[in-house]
Amino acid sequence: MADFQSGKPALDDWLKDMALYNQAQGYTRTFVIADESFNVVGYHSVCAGMIHRNDVSRSSKGSKAPPELPVAVLARLAVTKQHQGRGLGPALLRNALMSVVSAAQLVAFRGVIVHAIDDDAVRFYTKYQFQPTKGMERRLILPTKDIVASIAQVTR
Ligand SMILES: CC(C)(COP(=O)(O)OP(=O)(O)OC[C@H]1O[C@@H](n2cnc3c(N)ncnc32)[C@H](O)[C@@H]1OP(=O)(O)O)[C@@H](O)C(=O)NCCC(=O)NCCS
Image 1 (cartoon, rainbow, N blue to C red):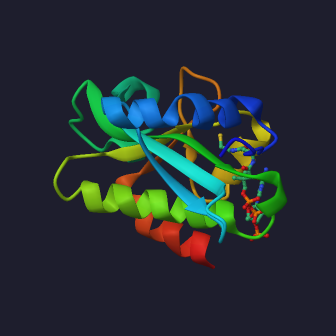
Image 2 (cartoon, rainbow, N blue to C red):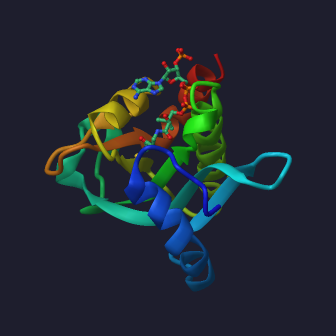
C-alpha cells in the first residue's frame, strides 16, 4: 500500500493515512483490489450522507421528497497508475454500486453521490450516468433506481 500511486496524491495519501482508521471508527468502508503479491492496486470507499432536495433534479428526488435525501457517498475511488487503462476503475465502480443496491434493501438510499476530484473524474462518472447536482461544483448523483442501468453500462 505504501507504493500506491494513482496520479492523485490526495487519494493516495488518504488510502495510506486514513482508510484503516476510518474503517475502525465507522466513518467509511473501504474495499481494495490487490495483485498476486498483495499490493493494493485499486480501492473505493463508501459512507452514508445526505443531500438537500433543492440540490437535485426532480427525477433524482422524486415527488414529495423530504428536505434531506439519504444517499450513499462514493467518497473515493482510484487505481494505481501501473494498472490504469485495464478496466479496473469501472470494475471498482460496479462493485461499489452493487454494494449500494444491496445495502439499499435494508437502509434507504435515494441515490449515490460522488465528489469528483477534477474534470477528468467528472467525465469518468458521467459516462456511467451520474448527473450534476446544484450548489456544489463536481458533485454528481446517480439515483438508486438508475443503478442497474448504470451497471449494465459499466459491464458493456
Ligand atoms: C479514473 C480511474 C478510476 C479510471 O480507472 P481505469 O481502470 O484507469 O479505467 P479505464 O482506463 O480502464 O477506463 C474504463 C473506461 O472509462 C473511461 N475513462 C477512464 N478515465 C476516464 C476519464 N478521465 N474521463 C472519461 N472517461 C474515462 C475509459 O475511456 C474507458 O471507457 P471505454 O471502456 O468505453 O473505453 C483511474 O484512471 C484513476 O484512478 N485515476 C486517478 C484517480 C481518480 O481520478 N479517481 C476518480 C475518482 S475522484
